[in-house]
Amino acid sequence: MGKKSYRRSKGIRWDLILFGMGTVLLIVYGCLQYKNIKDRHDYENTIVRLEEMKEYTLPTKPETEKENEQEEEEVSYQKFFDANEDMIGWLHIPETEIDYPVMQTMDDEEYYLRRNFFKEDDRNGTLILDTDSDISKTSNNLIIHGHNMKSGAMFAALKDFEDAEYTKEHSRILFYTEDEKREYEVIAVFRSRVYTVEDKVFKYYQFFEARNQEEFDNFYNNIKKLSEFDTGVTAEFGDEFITLSTCEYHTKNGRLVVVGKRI
Image 1 (cartoon, rainbow, N blue to C red):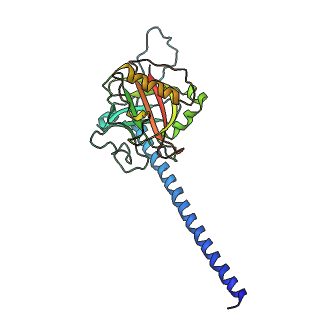
Image 2: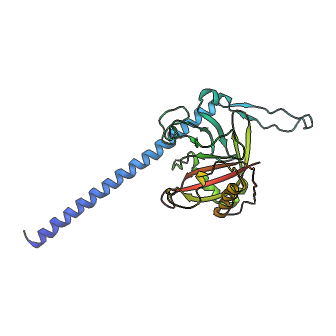
Image 3: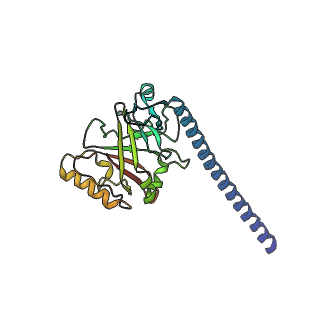
């Protein structure tokens, strides 16, 4: 084989290799896009079904209010509690996409990691209340976990809270239990990660209850130190908290965290 023929043959082989690599990359990209589209479709389908279950009621109007004043309807979540005994509450942050049931399964904390409210397979999953969180205790911290989905589902919207102005305008966090409506105000927004057992650092995901002033100070001082900006909200021993946690990819096992203080 002459040198020209050899070069031509070698060039053709490289063209075939590059073509093959390009084809593989296109297939991988197509699969990822398909998954994202499917995740969004599954999410939207679930949301439609949840919306159909909502029951709206008008709150009791105080006699002192003007008769022509516009009344805002409230949602009753009792139908959801009746439909699925795993639902521990409903989380809603007004004027955001975060408006979901929260599940708690003591025997298998990850049961709803890839299932929706209706217990169907769904990569979006459902919001999960940590099994170490107890809604019946005072001076506690409710830790709610949720996926950071590219589809925009679940806790993907928490990234917006890294903007101080946005947080100021969306600082109210509502959590409805079967017995009451709880309201929180954002006190800290920060990035962290899941550490190893050996790491001697503050681990926000291990704080569930301040049994004394020292435990409270450790939690409070650390979330304030880590916070990306000053929210202007303060707390003291005896206050209750809610912690929203999702994956963040700034580091290995990264997390984005939004903490609210009950008001």
